[in-house]
Length: 224
Image (tube, rainbow, N blue to C red; front, side):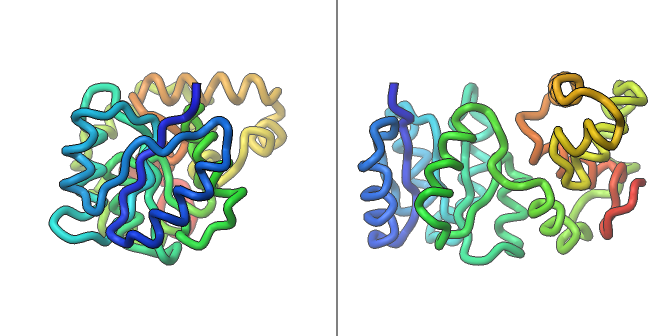
């Protein structure tokens, strides 16, 4: 079954370009388009979508608030934020709102297609190191660890799981974590899965965000 994609951008030309790229793929189908966040939410009420490509700066309802409302629904589609530059406060807010990652609008077609396939399969599409750089830039906007109720959930993790979570938040891949902790990659993957389950998170990007929110990792790269 083809991956059902929705394009949300107020620039018709950009939507047309993305649609042409996706239409050439046998495993993808553009099933809906919208020119702003409000229209996107309305269209999603009547259209089944797997992945939403979401611009952030749009009239009426921006992509951040639209992402927040979409991700709050039962069984929501995955959301990929589209932004003009990587250190973007809107991209940061989009991740906080529940997006599975963000991409630059001028990304090569091959990377865009790979990202859509990855997020559809349940993986985060943004390198944690890129996300971490974004959070370093905007970490002052995060709540303090003492006020964040999620801090209590971190305490449910085993010592090893906390160790793995810190390394994920510092941008390491499963293979790199395995080498650092002298574990098999399969074991690391199991630990990551348990972390996601215990903390009720969707993907590695959300792990990075939560690690900053709770003070487990601090801006500049140090452990909390």
